Length: 261
Length: 321
Ligand SMILES: Cc1cc2nc3c(=O)[nH]c(=O)nc-3n(C[C@H](O)[C@H](O)[C@H](O)COP(=O)(O)OP(=O)(O)OC[C@H]3O[C@@H](n4cnc5c(N)ncnc54)[C@H](O)[C@@H]3O)c2cc1C
Ligand SMILES: Nc1ncnc2c1ncn2[C@@H]1O[C@H](COP(=O)(O)O)[C@@H](O)[C@H]1O
Image 1 (cartoon, rainbow over the protein chains, first blue to last red):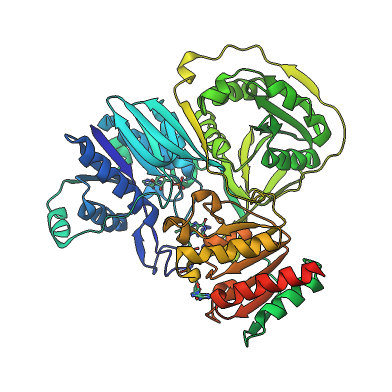
Image 2 (image 1 turned 45 degrees about the vertical axis):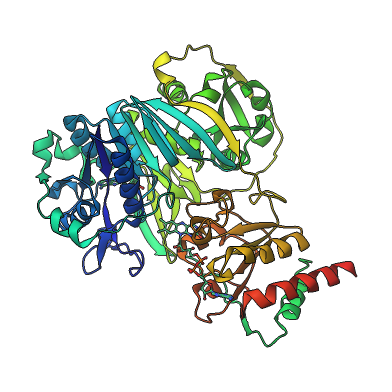
């Protein structure tokens, strides 16, 4: 099976407070440490396990991003992905979810992808709108919010997370499947993985390679505009106390004062 | 000119979903609110929507919408959009609506703003408020005219019954078999005890600070003494202590209770995103620098494992008087 996983590089959510540049109104990427999206790491792990269960399958990571994203792709390869494709082009800066999906769909179409895995939402943007748009551009079904996935023949079945539990949902392949965060244990790159990653196929593509007009993507193609960036209203500071054996009393007093008991 | 704002009203156990009524109530304040209801029980649900401000409801009572995800709804809404060209499609951030929005956006190149907590028109221009991280808010718009889509955060708007009745238009369209591809085979509920998190006026939540799964019982005990629901952070859901339905936060549920008690929770931005709207927040954490304290009305620096049982006993005692 020709399997694909869409991944991206983001400012490290554990060390970077993500900021918007007031002038460009885009995410600040310079001078911050960038990592493979941890959500995508979990999706890659799910994809690797599935590839190994299915056998006779190849897993390719696809990313649209700046050249710095090569590093994130190397990590994906080190984790066990077989090939990587990075689409990078100056005209892509400022792309919205639709522009991003257009580019990724063009790659996946050329490749003849049979199964495409994405994360349900990215950790930095969390619009969650890219995977569904890829599916629409390719004219194939999308199986979303999967916390379990099974593939048999030309059919995929997932457990789709819902408010109250889950649904068992199936569709034919090719399909886009989105993996719910935290559902799959992460695979960590081994030393051997890191070494062999250097020899794995890594392609870089531009918009021209994909036959996409620059006006359809990047800031030029974006259908949303940021008008202003402001400060969030802070919650009024509360009272902080140290427990000296009387915390339960004090909390109960607080609850009574506000008629919460 | 008054704007026409559409929403898709989802059906839950035969009733309009609360999250749908939230956005419908908001739409009624912004302009002319119209709704779409799809599925076997669509007609019964449609009849209730005038009360929440809908002036018109498009109804297609076909069970295919209940058995097949996303595509039948996308096809039908596409046809309606082309025929009526509303100004805005305002949707709640639910599992189903997100999938539908993503495809509609791609099919019609509409423009889509997610995670909205507020929106208004200033003259002709739509202004959508979107929180970004903990400290920033962004104001965004659809600059290109035509129908735009906005996905609103759950609990961003209150449900308001304003009375009224809606014109019902029953659709007679045939769904294409090509849209019936994503089939629901089974629905499984993993219900938690007590009130549903989304409805509870008191929530007691636990995090990794409870140290081990057995100690989560202390959270459940306090929740039950307060007549509330127990919740959790993603850390302990991922650790397998509890099913996902307990998770509160960016990738879990958004809650807005009167009282939220956070026990052994650090207060990561992604957790805060789901509970910051609570009226009163009480936090118990060993670490005086835990970020949760910046959101708390009452912060207690101490050991949740020793405070929780004492507090449960105290609550029971005071309630008995
Ligand atoms: C894309 C993405 C989405 C996410 N979505 C969510 C989400 O929806 N919901 C969510 O909750 N998280 C979410 N997270 C995870 C989030 O970033 C945090 O990792 C998580 O909320 C931390 O959970 P915690 O507070 O239980 O654990 P920790 O951060 O480990 O905090 C434990 C706290 O307990 C305190 N403690 C320890 N012992 C005691 C004791 N005996 N008594 C009192 N306090 C004690 C510690 O001081 C510490 O502050 C998401 C992360 C990402 C990247
Ligand atoms: N630039 C990108 N390159 C590759 N995959 C992406 C990109 N943007 C989004 N995705 C995929 O779509 C998922 C959801 O992203 P988003 O819709 O931005 O929240 C991500 O986790 C990836 O799997």
